[in-house]
Length: 150
Image (cartoon, rainbow, N blue to C red):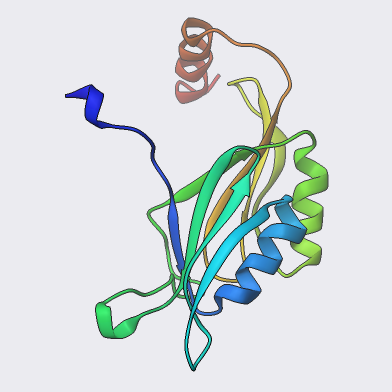
């Protein structure tokens, strides 16, 4: 069964795909690979962005097909996690470009410094960089201590 699986691509739907692509390029360093636009309206049907070897797909909303982006201020059930060289700098850049801060960067028990921003289109991004190598066993011990008030 595993031999049929090849890759997983996150696919984001947004109210303004062209603006989202600009934001992801400027805030996160993504590189646009290509885009397909709908004639004659120019609505973004599909775009692919390279995030350091990972592909993110983006499109405009298609309400007639039941495809909607997240609503501003509404809870979301999905977060995208990007691993960067300097989480503080990337978070600051994202905020300067219109993101909102959900959680400031802080050192975490799992060996990463990370924070959370919500992009201007409603998607939640966890931005982090490694600060130490932690084994899964040590991570569990630290998690247990954290959950027990330690």
